[in-house]
Image (cartoon, rainbow, N blue to C red):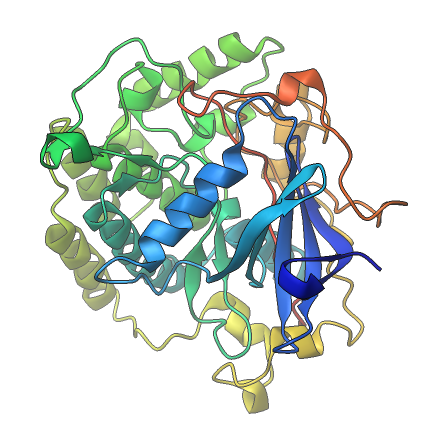
Length: 402
């Protein structure tokens, strides 16, 4: 069995996620006896995303105000031909949760209450990331994971490979200048309109992408998810046109007024302007009050647990072997089926995932014959600031339902 880290501390177990550029394994800390997530990336990659991601994690962890919604990093280093990042093991992503709510309860979307509680947590996490000088640039359901071991009510943001400083540390913390003609950064389905227009991403784009993600969770799909175009650039252009033609009013017609107000605030911000986080928090609170909802930390997925297991006193890691195979994907929702009908919406582990549109999580691969990930295809080399997205490598754990 392969081991990595100082004094071979971390045991590498089975694959729990993979993409074009890295592979994520379930691991075991032989010192603390805890499960961990071990992310491996070949050193042969042209632009190493994992080294950058580890620096972002380190900077966020050592800031004056550490962020609770960021997973802990236990070790980063090199093992043979691979860079290795060992992190706190987390639970499933919001997208996986939505898929299994669909399978178990026949629901196509999350409840308004759950979406608002997610909004409150992710907005606060983004505020803290921004306060530490970074823009995240890839908000999407796959990058938002719930916790384990009594933390299933907490939402974490993972995968900081595209995070970028928006303050120039060499210029007394001044905001970086606006630049035009940029490639789209992140995931096209949830990208802001300014991102589509080729403008440098700033804090306003993170909160707009969050708005798209919340709308998706509340509705189960977005109008431009059904776009079927073979050429990637044409696909991105079609998604951009879809966002422009749809408009905020039409997009949010079936949702509470606060959703449209969220987008109007984002679109009114200038490039360097700080979002009014307090105002956005007030929108969330106002929606809670108007709809007589309670912020009790009981999410849609909480109802799948028995009353004796609430409030999240049971480790998801401890219960994942009670008959529910988390590695077997459920039948796709109508939105996922429509999205997968067009080849640009899905990629394999060897295809370039540059600015990939939103897709449902891929079936997790079987454990490889060798414990280390295979070398990616030449297309996998990406530019950190060239508008290219890292792989969809979740490291979620299992969840027991009903």
